[in-house]
Image 1: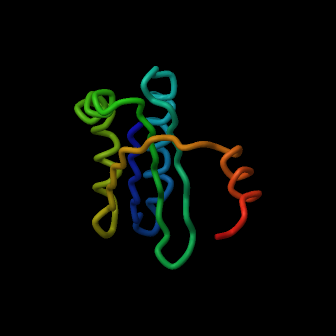
Image 2: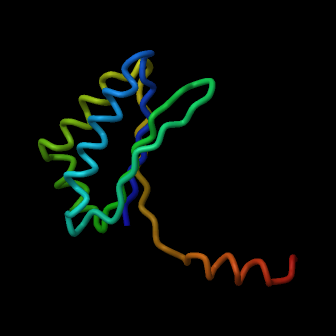
Length: 110
């Protein structure tokens, strides 16, 4: 699984433009088989930011998406950032879910 996390720092007044663009991309990729999840979140605070996250089944699926016109819309949203956006890709393997929390919490602390 590949996870993409993008942090965009919108200038005052352009938050809704960035969010609208990213939400439209989210709707468009929601039904793609290889897209496992997509979310848009707004983090308020000292450095207001919009966080856009995608999870892809394979690297090949991510690469197809990065070459697509749809990803061009993500790039356009990133261009609106008042400081350079942060873009990070992670290759991860699932080690568990809530059952992992349960197992770890009942294990003795070493």
